[in-house]
Length: 211
Image (cartoon, rainbow, N blue to C red; front, side, top):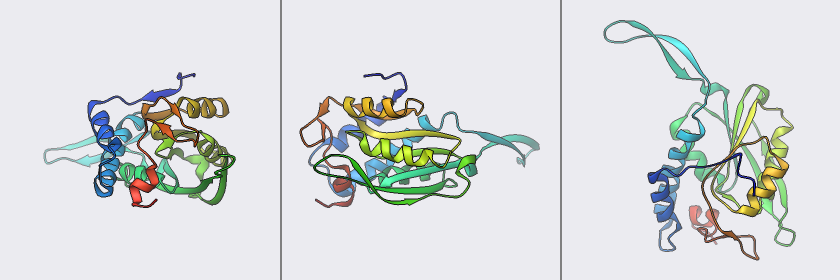
């Protein structure tokens, strides 16, 4: 597995909240809250090189030049439906970002991604895109989503997830070696059904309280 372009965010607060999310007894409400908090923490690392611009402001004492995030250049893309949980955490940090959605479902027989929805903001060629999805399992959905987004020729792309499997990293980095991956942990492997082990279960079901 090539991890040259993979960043594992091992901050103690990230790891602490991830452990609480992994617990089978964690309620839907707490899982959702923790996901928002953890995603906001991930955002600090992912947005470290975010473009900025200078503005003139008045402090209580004098005029100065200071910097602001160039939020208009950022586009967050949620892979439906589970990506919405990470999206909320990022928007808490950069509320001015534009938002795109791509709908994919995994064919249970082939484990391949099938697209059913695609809606992006205009002028993506001038924007930096961050694609969010809680799990990088087989990698097929992430590969399909990024391939589709690349058709719009964005300025840059990053991929952010909570958990990744080695198999998913292999699949994704082979297809998109130019796209950095940010995750809170790389787990052991996938099971026969394509779920990450030890993992945290189905992220979408745990976020929305469905089965």
